[in-house]
Amino acid sequence: MVIARMKIWQIYTVAGLVCAAATAIAWFALAAPTFEQLSERRGRQTELTQSRHKATELAHDLADARKEMKVLSGQLASNAIELQPASQVNQRLAALTTLATQNGLSLNELRPGAPSETSRSQVLPIHLTGAGDYPSCAAFLHGLHESYTDVGLSSLEALNSDSSGETSRLNFQIELVWYTKK
Image (cartoon, rainbow, N blue to C red):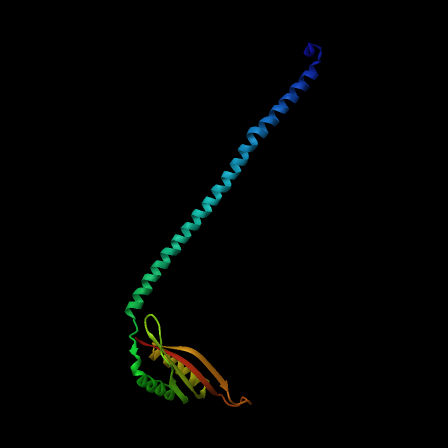
């Protein structure tokens, strides 16, 4: 019998090695995969928590946007702009001429363009050229915005015709769009 011939310390050493081997086998076979699964589960739980938080934020943002849309829809319905027919183009051109003159601008040219159709209205371009100083141009545009909410500014080009820069007289070219009834 081999165990009877072994000394006590040898028996303890072999038993210790057997226990160490059993522990290593148990660790790699049972505990390590369990810890990996636990780590993966914690990662998925963190992801899920973050996704839920993001979904809650998005739901609040959506609710806020719907409230804002409802308010804006109410304001739009109460402040609806009544469009004029394009047949009143001569009256509109006369009104624009009056507004420009009242604000100190001199017009060289004022002419309507060819109308185009949109889903809700007709768009009639209006071309203006003339001269005036910067404050007069700004006052004209401000008056245009205040008085004619159905007219939009498409482009504005202003050039100082005096190369020395001694005068503030500008030559301007303004492109407007007038939204009219279909």
